[in-house]
Image (cartoon, rainbow, N blue to C red; front, side, top):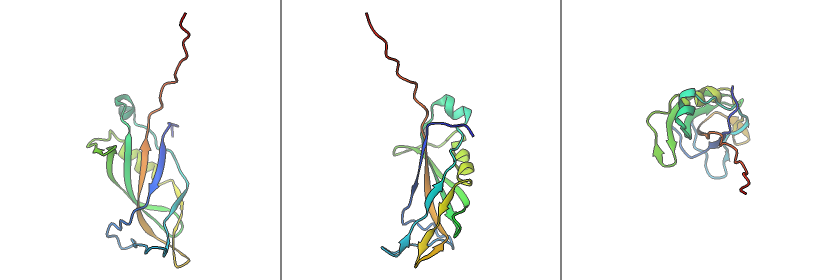
Length: 135
């Protein structure tokens, strides 16, 4: 996969998505999954040419072994504005996320499967600034 200057973070909210493997962790009752190995997604040519930047939000179940399962694209946004067409970045985020590995969520000292939202930030590289001396 191409290397682009982009960042990814995992957002853990108290959102359970209504899945059978989803559990709401009570305060102090456990821990959420933590990404330990990430793969940067590719930027589609169409999105790169359009200069599209933003956040792909993906819902994923992190199983007891830290393996992501059943990723589902939720939305693409730039700041508070939702973008209806991510020009393929939604698919690139889902594809890369399936290759991530996590430290699984813990509850009562045992690893558990938990559905969470992961946010992958797409940020195009900025051209280098040139110092031009003026005479």
